[in-house]
Length: 91
Image 1 (cartoon, rainbow, N blue to C red):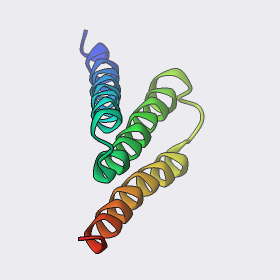
Image 2 (cartoon, rainbow, N blue to C red):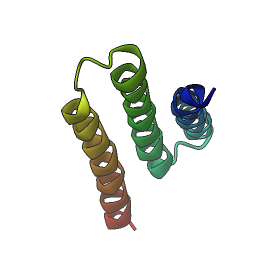
Image 3 (cartoon, rainbow, N blue to C red):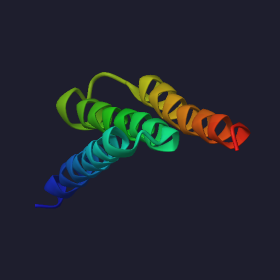
């Protein structure tokens, strides 16, 4: 029974990040706020990272996708940081 908890948590994290990306994207389309755009990109990459996590640990445990997950996480955080800097310079 306990071996179902980890995959369930991974999938819930993927769904939560995807839902955040969708809601941020919808808000961006309405308001055209640049920070919402960068946040949407960040959460989209975080959702992709969680999907790769599920693939790595549940679907394909014989493959090590840790480097790919790390690079996706780095890209997500760098994108959001770039958005903060870019948005801060215009004010």
